[in-house]
Image 1 (tube, rainbow, N blue to C red):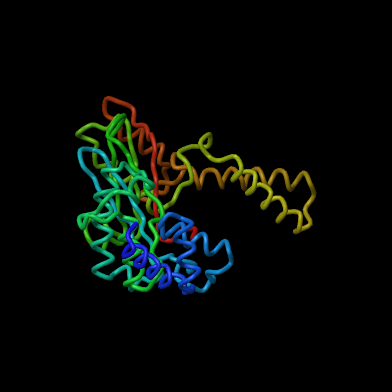
Image 2: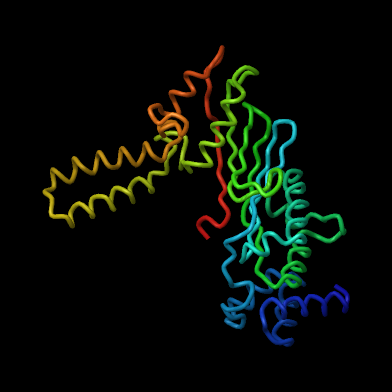
Length: 287
């Protein structure tokens, strides 16, 4: 690393953390010039304060989708405020990032190291953007659906531009034919609206079910009910929880008298329709 690069990295680190020159130089030296690792280093040392940019909560931002030849990639990029999410420079950064994410097949670590159009890495461009805009910006998560074993459908809710919005969902369906393709788009919309946790009961994380069961039973105990009544009521409540949160058992948003599994059966032509996988990103959810 040249003397100029060293000074530039120290300057960036000072802007991002508010820490003095000496500590920033030490952090940069200890982490081979990596600014992100240097931030973590300073935080672990208790030098970078929680009130500084890299410690703020970034719960706004955008979700972007790129689709080509039945392959689809998603990426969520977060900012602290919705104002920045509408910033032209932030938006252009996100658009290029979405293109690169598709090429990297959703591998975030690979993405962060790849060069952008200005011949600077994604990681360096991210740090420069944070310094310029003055907010914490994070590349939070990504996913990739290849074109094998089914047809991929996606939906963007609250789109600000084509394939850019606040909520995005992707679903891969096996057995889709030309005549029933429209059902895939509707299922992607359903997923965006209902936020299922799994495809079916067997795919649901057991720890989630256990936790929900504990909460339900504790709530019933506090109401003074007998154990046998508690067990009976809790069984019914947990079955409803599973139905509400598993895609195939959810009530179809376009006809609440039917489950999504019924819609799949009704929509098949010569082949059964099977949902292979799905994902849903909502900006800032869980941050």
